[in-house]
Image (tube, rainbow, N blue to C red; front, side):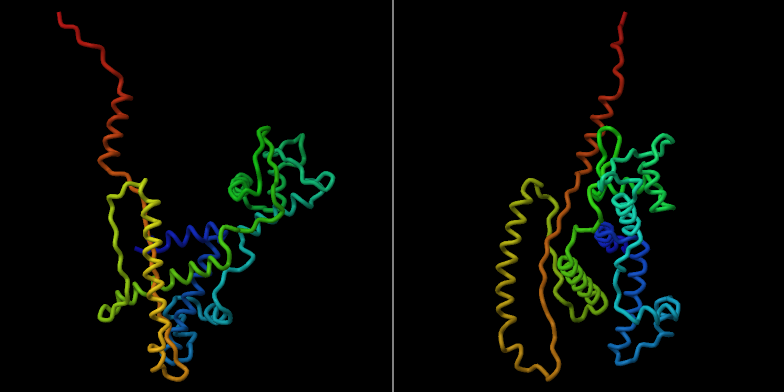
Length: 284
């Protein structure tokens, strides 16, 4: 199902500060470029009209997209709103005292001019201040104090959960795995390696030891394969100007699930505890 593919991708995009609008634009651009690459692979010059027909994207938009590679714009809308608020908090005279940002009451108050509500309304109009506050707290740009005020903790928010290098590695591995699985589904006559072994009856406390074992065994196997691939015998028959890329990726996967019988037993036990006890029947 599509959601099985999009779920982990969406988690990555949200963690990296990519809004749904930017994700949609990126997906559209990738569709257009993939359609163009397919035509180039057939030794055809990309035809804007044909690409528009295949992807459902307007011809003018196709032409614009093909002028540059797919990417997420550096000025993402959601991050732009967040950084406008943070910048205002550090620079606006109404929210600064002695070159230091003020501690702000959250909601508007007729006796207090500088509040978080007024800050957001000034620098992110159209964004509900409570939503902005929750987001700033989530990314640790703002801290709620015990007295009900909020304190700013950073001048600018940068989604730092993933470095550029780690993102490249994620993208490369996911691309290779999906291409292998899709090629196997479309051309089962010449399958690529895509094997999986698993069991679903493991004690969760044993997972750290099993992870270590999987790392050790996969490292040993891949090291041997890498040495074999480096052999000169694979390179002797190579045609001039042509090279092929081949590799093997090993990955583990896991999730912890509650046994349904255990859940039902717990529910029944909980229900019995909540059920009021009846007084004993007295038999005359």
